[in-house]
Image 1 (cartoon, rainbow, N blue to C red):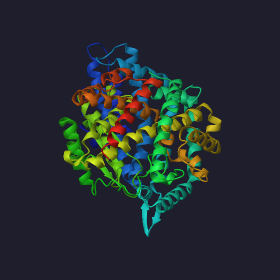
Image 2: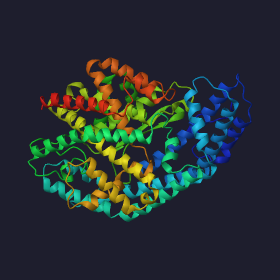
Image 3: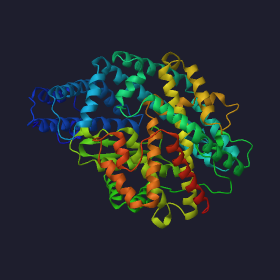
Image 4: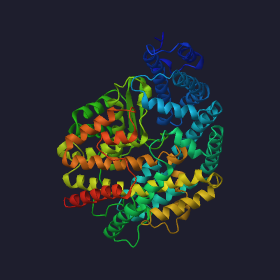
Length: 575
């Protein structure tokens, strides 16, 4: 057993590589046999989980305050001095285990992953991977610093966007243009950053002897169960089944609003999502404080399942959340794992909207995954495919939705809850075409890397895809804003190809929701069972454990859309 290994990541948060290296040297030098391999893997896992948590804590520090120079310096020191060395040392241990031909208990899938990673690994890529992370931090800094003066006050663009839900259309349009102009002001900076991203990724793929970055990313993301062609099949199914359903939603709302055409400022996010409610329908105002958000979400989870409710309460009690929006906080939301203690950290930018409620439910679903896998012995068994990790979060949004009412300790009257659920389901339908735009754009970028590095060509392709998948929103006269939409999709820049997962996971989540319609307890039990498997089985097996089908075809997509439209019709009877 390893001697003097600190108990937690916090004990090594300021360590440099010379303090960490001896543990890897000891593991590398230790002989392996059938009788010793389990103990060896346990020690390897102990080191790895502490370093994973160290990285998570450093990343959290940079995102909760993008202006924190000390946090940025510590992250850069990690990326420069520790990350490349850890990757190289981890690679040697993977090779050691693979060469031994030994298979620890429950390691079939981790070994499969290791073989792929060993094939992909190049020491020459380590500094490039670190550079890629630094570029991602720069992207966050650009967007984190974007503020505007609105009615005499400097506010974030997230807060400005609250105006898109106001009934006054002129006010919405004014806010939309102010936000768009502020984002366009950084057009050159984002374009320059994009070219750096493309250059780094081209070199990463070349070093790994891959024909392009997509081929590299497919292996890096351990996608064994589907191909780029499957993604294109999924996008074709979305175009055939979902785009007409989405267009029906836009047409219905356009009539309710009495408009000749829907403009982006008629949508609650000012982009692609559900339309702003008519003026005679008051805006949903679910909470006025973060404490209220926490307490009501807790009540909802306790109705879904008492164990899940307990997990959320524990997360809050232990200070493992940062939910409020503020200046110099990174955009977006996430849940990360503090792996050595098997606890989550939930990050949200809440400003008092229904979207904040749904985001908190979503990220809490990820946190439940972390709790359900807490008894899995080895960190290598925790690598859950993202396509299923997002089932945990999206599935929880839907499983929680029947309990949004005040009668259940939630946020809304029965009528408000019905409206919120309609908005959610319709928003999911509207999401699939947007997801198809994001994935098809990335497929094109890395299939055509020369054009993909040309920001003008990127603008053109994004505009073409937007018109193909989202025909229900009128961007006439706003072409510059439309074609630069790819600037504003964080995933394209920071985590390339990480978006199709949401579309596939949503398809799984809707199937779980369908099961819950007839057997809520059984659906939750299957959901938790699937989460508890971690990364020990294949992606189709995880879906199967949750009683869902992993698929890309028109019939599966149509069944899901039919279910959602049926539920919307039922709920409309309560509004």
